[in-house]
Image 1: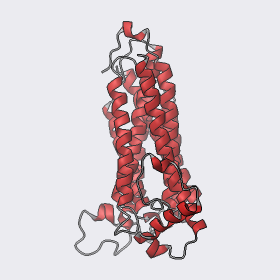
Image 2 (image 1 turned 135 degrees about the vertical axis):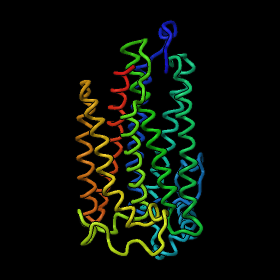
Image 3 (image 1 turned 45 degrees about the horizontal axis):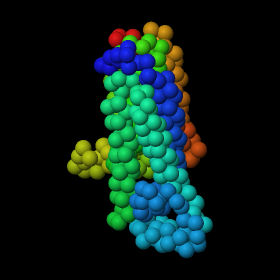
Image 4 (image 1 turned 90 degrees about the vertical axis):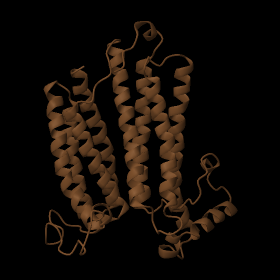
Length: 345
């Protein structure tokens, strides 16, 4: 538990740090949305090299564009699905993957630059440096995870590993949750200079675990294109669970590798997660936090968007709203968890 010293607080600027972190959180939400579009448009394998620094500059000449296109032509996805694609078509999918990677670089700079500035000016409250450094390190790891995911689709597979996609998304959301929690701690510190950081209470921990598991299955659904398996609700075709969906001798691997099973779990786990989130919302409401209302509203909207995504045949605009709302729901959940954690400190 962080316990700032009064002497150090005279130079610290917790509210300035909180505003900076909220700005970074906004960029991460945008990153999650662009990542969803990148996946839905099958654009994620259009850039076949990882150049963390020089890759910030896109192809500028016809020769550079042709070289990038030639690199894409060498991977299995092109040979299996996109033979005959024009250069203009390649530029369209390149745009989303490039924007996704560019946002990652911008987020890295937007976090590291101000962190160095606040550190050099001794404006970081006591006890917060390790947490901020850990978030920075996790952001750097996220970049490596992104390439690890892309690399899975460059040699044998015709798409990226759905399991690596899940790790990539969940890591981004863990970073988002950590940044939001830290920003809320800093806002509280500004209002009460000696207030300790909020605690994660068991009810909040359970709600967050349920939400993250559900978000993980959402990533698996996207990675396996499981949303296309059945476009009906509440039944899958004419049954709650389709006959023959599990092959003879099926093992536990079906839970994360079988598109039909993954869609089924994602459908119904949503209501288990919703129940946990509503309990958290109720606890937040008891102490007067409006975050509880936001959680309930976003849960209802998220389930509605999930059903709409299925019934629409996974239309991109509906699916993207579903992913955006998931990120907003996570922010609201963290805020509610922080509120009840502060009330018990």
